[in-house]
Each structure stands twice: as structure tokens, then as C-alpha cells.
Image (cartoon, rainbow, N blue to C red):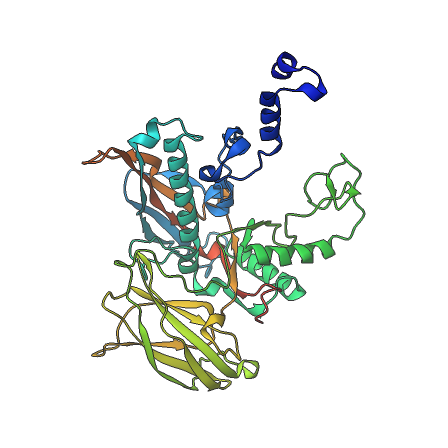
Amino acid sequence: MDLFERNYNGFAQSNSETMELLSKALTAGTGVDASAFTGGRALTPESLDFTLVNILFSQDEARLFQRLKKTPVKSVVRQWNTRTEVGQDDGAWVTEGGTSESSDQTIARMFAVAKYLQTYRQVTLQAAMSEMTENAMAIEKDAGTRWIIRNVEKGLFDGNSSFISEQPDGLKVQIPSTNVIDFRGGHADRETFENKITEGLGTIRASYGKGNLLLSSIKVTTDISHMLRDKYRVPLPAVGAPSQLGLPGAGAVGGVAGATFPINFPTPFGNPEVLDDVFIQEGSIPVASTLTTKCPSQPTVAGVAHGADASSKFGSADAGDYVYKVVGVNKYGDSVASAEVLVTGVAAGDKVTFQATPGVIVPTAWKIYRSKVGGTTGAEVKFMSEVAYALDSGQVYQTLSDLNADLPGCSDVYLLTLDPSFDAIEWFQFLPLMKFDLYPVNAAVYPFLMILYGAMALKKPVQHIRIKNVCPTNGGWF
């Protein structure tokens, strides 16, 4: 206003300086390519949000790691004793003054070995000293922390030291086969899935545990919510009234005052909390590692065949054609996928076999990707299973097989006993999550490691359940 008041000589007599500034203001324009700014746009100040807008996961997304009991230890090997029996019941009752039979308890020594998760980060001296929109060191440390979170949570489910020795064993390995329920491509919004949940919690209860957490993928959790929504068609409490049927506190859902959505799955054997975990996923496709000089070389696949096998789970509805791809795996990541192979005429009761030959850099495991029945191209394949690397005796290849036991396009659901009073599971931590500063060598940088050392100990494996081959309703596979 000062500029206008100082130079104003009447509407028709405004001086040229005033009109030029007004013209610039009216034609400033928008955009973020500073090199292209001209005229009024070059003089326009830019508004900078001094908060990094993060669209990635937070610690809260690591549902399992966040809830695990953490036990600090001073050794990389965690040992504990497990008692599985207090003695047989034979000869328990005696006559008055009678003699008693001896009974022996059963105790075994168990252990878990710490694994080491690290990521290298660095910030240049210039970035650290510059006045930037964000503190360079702080956001790099935050990025490293999120990287740790993602990898430890994924390892809690899918880690397998038989495939990659540096990994810890996750739930998929540590839960015994007797506690695995095969849902065979069913959907979680059906009564049949409710029956599987009840069956699983009953199995845990029979082993003197009590499942209190259900973890599943986002899509499967959505299906579960649909089933629970239909189950709770009951009068809802008024706003502020205590919740009913073990539901959360009163609120408003869908515009209905007092409506609440259940976050617990009601069964006769407990009401586990239902949570999605973004790191449980289905339908993954082959993605090659960026560490191209360290990850396995692209494998080749040949010798495809199929024939009857007593262990086959291929049924009449599964008869038809399939497309396969194979990927080599090591601690540096996945190889480029093999060329696709088409297997035609697979019949009920068959087993599919094929020979995978490694490249120059051999893997430590194989990932097998497969299409659904009727597949025609490699673009249709999804992750199916993983097996350890071990060449056939005297051969340059390894024979891989598919009995249709693991279904692509599906994921796992876990029922876990996390209540600390049962002492059924814990994360033992050799060192806390920490930033370890390194010494700069011949470069003006601040290098450091973000590290986490530890492992998950499933101290009572029989008090946990894995439900495999659960297919989302919108998966379109089964």
C-alpha cells in the first residue's frame, strides 16, 4: 500500500512504475521449475513446508514387532528350558496308605541365535551445514529407522535361515506343521473362515495358551471386517454409553450415533484383537535386486514334466495349463526371473516338476512363481513358494516341484498368544535400535550405521497358529 499511496496521482495518471509492478503481480503464474521463472514469476516468493511429508510406514505399522515382549540380553545366544510334561497320569490313585508310582517331568534346553540387521547411511558435510528445509542428519536417521522397521517386521513372518543364513527364523518356520491350517484359497468373509479361526484358537487353548492377536494382510482384514460387520447387527449403545459385547468405546460410524465397529473376533476360546499388517502381502511379482553384481544370476528352467503323485493337491477344478517362473535368491536380493515356461495338460492328482539351473552367481534359495489355472503368459505369475538351493546329486540343476500345496495369490493369517503371562513369544534384543557413527575416510561426509541385533524366540510354538492359503475376495484367483 505504501508504494501505491506514494505514487498515486489519480486513476488515469498512474505512473509507469506502479503499472509495471501491478502487471508483474497479475502475471506471476505458478510452477516449480525455478530455471524457467521469468517476469513476475521470478520475483514471486515460494512457500516451503518445513515438515517432511512422509507417505511411508511408521513404527505403528510394525504391528507384531511393536507388540512383542522385548527382553534385553548380554549374549547373542538366548537359551531357555521348556517343560513339556510333568509326568504320566497312570497310577495316580492309590488306596489308603498305598504306595505311589514315580513320574518324571520332561524338560528340554532350547535356544535362539541373534541376527544382525544393519543399513549404511551418510550425510555430506555440505548438506549437514546448509540451511535446508529439513535437518539432513535427522531425516537420514529417520529413513534408516524406517528401513529397519520394514525389514525386521518382514523377517518376523517370512525369515528363514535355511534360505538365507543371515536371516532369523520367522513365524512361518517356527510354527509347527501341526499348528498350520490350510484354507485352500477360501475367502475370509465366509462362515468357513470363522470356523477356521475358532478351530485355531481351540488348538491353542488345548495347548494351555490363549490366542489374543489375529494378524492378516490389508485385503484379508477387509474381508474379516465384512464378516464381523454382518455379525454385529444389534442395537447400538447411546453416545457415551459403555460399549456392548466387548466392542470398543462408543463413537460414530457411518453417521449412526453410538455405532462402533468391533476390533475383536468373538469365539468360545477368546476374542483376539484383529489387526492388519502391511508387511503380510499376497500376489507379489518378481522384482530383481538393484545389487546386480551381488545378487544371483538369472537362472534357466528346462525339463518340465508332470505326472501322478499320491501327495498331490491338484483337484479336478485345478486341471489345466499353468505358467511358471523361477527366481534365484541370496542375502543381496532376488535375481532377474527366468524365462516363463508353460505347462499344459496338468491333471488332478499330478505333480509338476522342472529343472532350474543357476547362473554364474549361485543362489541360496529359489522362489517359484506361478499363474492360476488357465494362465498363458508370464505377466500372470504370482509368488507361490520358496525352497532351499541344493543341486541334484551329480547335476548342474535342481529339480523343483509343485504339488499345489502352496497357492499363489494368497497370504497367511496368524493367531498368536502374545499375553506376557503365557511367556509364549518374545523378541530378545542383544543391542537396542541405535545409530553407530563411523569414521569418514577421504570424503567430507558423516557416515553411520543404523543397527538392530536380536531375534524372535517362539518359546511355546504350539500356542500359535498359522492359517495358510487365504485368498482375498478381490484377488480373483480362487
